[in-house]
Length: 72
Image: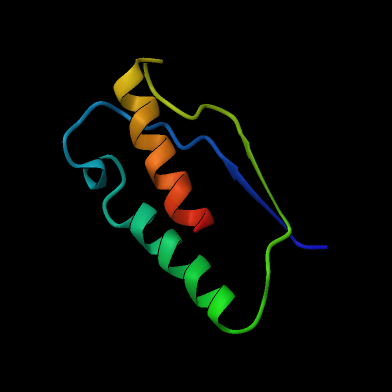
């Protein structure tokens, strides 16, 4: 069983999420894609810690979009 744990994503309301951690979130997404394309699988994804910064809807919308992209 393979488990991916993501912690403390801290999405903010900023227009371009890359501003928060330059390149890190897109690189992480690319690493997961490469891992799957190499024939591996992830059975479960646990998301813990702070998902957003202020707890406003726009931040959760960004986080959900990113999570959907990762799980796709």
